[in-house]
Image 1: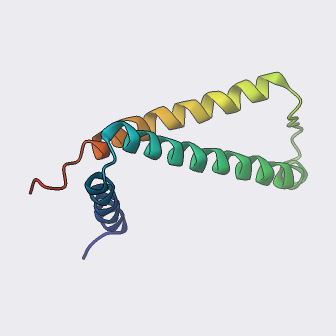
Image 2: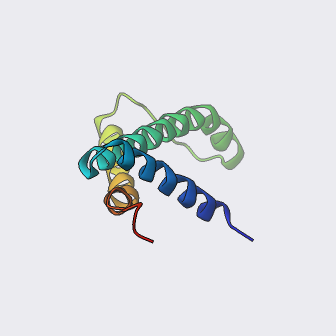
Length: 107
């Protein structure tokens, strides 16, 4: 049985192979993969901020703890951007350059 990640890797390698055959270079492919990853991570961060804003009052009501989350606080933005950067670097830099160096003609 083929796992979902293996299917995604196969599909992605076919896409990379097609782009290389058409004439895309490794730097172009790496940049495309990095931008796609950054967009996905940014969308996830925005979604999580929205969920936090909606669910925080319920959490405070259930636990009885006090807490606040303000997007006007500069420390919050530092933490969010640091988390975004860390996730981006740890999850996408190496795979982007590894996949962009894929040679479709070699078995």
